[in-house]
Image (cartoon, rainbow, N blue to C red):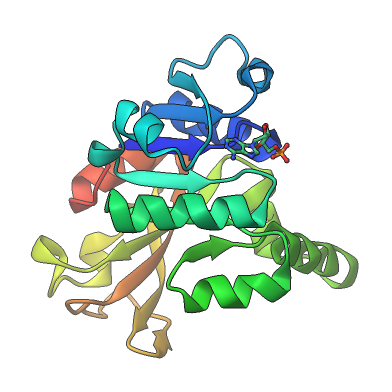
Length: 216
Ligand code: AMP
């Protein structure tokens, strides 16, 4: 996938490296050239110095053909403007926005933006660590296991969970159908528009996505 990341700070640089190591095409934009030093020597994507909501710059880095855009600067307002530009002007299909202020998170969601509030997430994770151990922390801290969310369409419609599971590599753990969560058994048949939550080994991600016809 072709991904544009605005902000090459602590989050942006980490994300850029993750995606680039997986073979995605990444362009990172930052207003400070020195920020790109965070990317290290192994990063094989592109960098561009400038403002993340500069229309000319975004055109130059190929925003029209991007599959995803992440606004992860350290300013909520900057991220909001970048995300709006990416969504409304360049019509990038996946636009994700980092939001610090939990109060604003609700407003941004109401504007139809797909947001991730590090503040809310981090507080929840700290709470989990203090009170109980949770699987979500394990997923984030190790790089071995992941949860894949799969939208049921095309050849997956009408298949049973047994047919979808890949022994030793992928297991469908839950199905979201409208507002209901189903914990399936192997005979459960999936329907169009279901969303499957599958536990998958990170090393098998590419293989299982190809097997299931999910976008790689
Ligand atoms: P951090 O807080 O470590 O994730 O860093 C945020 C990064 O966002 C820094 O490298 C900033 O230079 C960068 N940044 C802030 N505002 C903009 C902007 N308008 N356009 C591009 N990059 C920005």
